[in-house]
Length: 108
Length: 108
DNA sequence: TTAAAATATGAACATATACTAATATATACA
DNA sequence: TGTATATATTAGTATATGTTCATATTTTAA
Image (cartoon, rainbow over all chains, first blue to last red; front, side):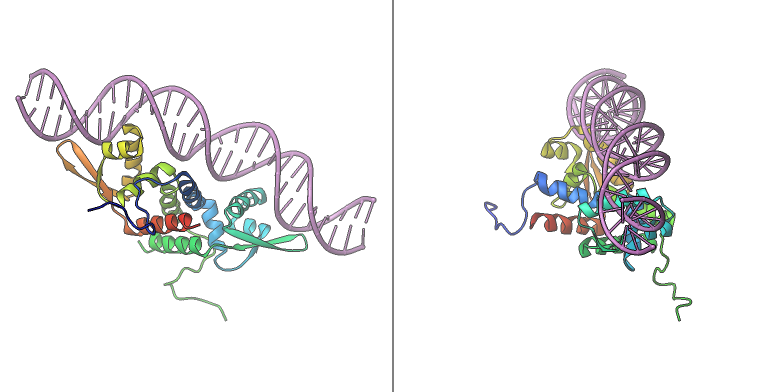
């Protein structure tokens, strides 16, 4: 007796290309130590590009490249103040996953 | 007045190497379409290696490689039945994150 | 308009990653 | 023991990824 099914829950064995791409990109963003460190900084407050670079001892260009990556996925946003751009996180769901996983990893 | 702090919550601006490694590895596991498809299959039930390969139209060796990756991170486990190995998921936290993110991606 | 400060971009490089074909290993059973 | 089935492993290859240096762009202010 398993014919049709309501369409409000996924039922197929495989995922469609688009979902697959979005999901993998999202996790890929969190799969790099540098990006994790940057997002971890942004838990607290907004940071300028140079602020991040100094805090984490990274090159300005490295930070800028990774921020572009994160911004493309809308994981961070920024506001401008003069020539300075202040970045902050912009995806609660992703930040929660990150926090949970960090705590999970720390406490064991 | 912000001197010391109780040690039950993380306070430093940067993460230690070990945490960083574990967290990035975990997300890296979910950052590949093939591994996502495999784990997504395992939501339902256990699968043999060939079962996965046939269901997802992948080579046996591709599946075996990715299963080794997932098993090293203890994201899957297996039980043997004759020459057949039945794989199933083995980390509720990771599977929940995956499910949430898939639904998040599907419904938009 | 020129200079300075902050950030972004492009190219080059090294490393990591994923897939494949071929082969090895392991188990069950005649 | 020998064979068939299922899975694991190894080596090779192509592509993706992350960092760096050098340079370009943008904004502000003199």
